[in-house]
Structure formats: C-alpha cells, structure tokens
Image (cartoon, rainbow, N blue to C red; front, side):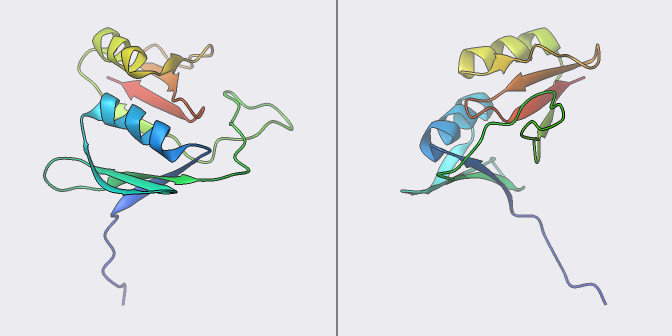
Length: 122
C-alpha cells in the first residue's frame, strides 16, 4: 500500500538563502512564512507547495548548459506564462539573467541570483 504523500515544498541551496528568497518573492509575489538564519520559506496564496532556500556553504553554481566536467544543475523550476516578453521583463526586473543558450522558441531560460536555471514557457 502506498502511503499518503503530499509535496509541501522544493528546497534550493544557496550561499545566501535570504537573497535567493527575496528574488523569488519579487518574481512570484509569494509571502515569507519562515525566516531563520539558514532557512527561508515562501508560500503561494491558497494551497500548493512552497519554495525554501537553505544555506550551503560549499555551493557551486551550476553551468547552463553544462558540459563535461561542469557543475550540473540538479533541479530547475518551470513557470507557465501567458506572454514570454512580459514575463521575461518581469524576471529581469526581479534580478534574473537571461541565459545565453536558449533551447526552444516557446521557452526562455533564466538564471536566478544563485545561478539556478528556471524556465518560462507558453
């Protein structure tokens, strides 16, 4: 029998969890629900999994796209948007950087302040 499991959140490592949480708070408009020295959590309005950010003192930024021997990304976030240009401008205003390599016309890859890739897609 499979136990009842509900995803409550996704955790991203960072050398500065408050900086990364502040970026995603600006990007998504979510509220901080937990703020500790090495851990910050933001939650969407209503129900659904949140995002948490924890200190990793030996954090190494992933390379996008990664080549042989490069630090690989371990996870990335996908966000559905209505308009790539508007959402992309908002992401940049929040502190994201447009990745140099873009794999598809209907997806835009951005890097958050810690270098985690995330995608905006139609």
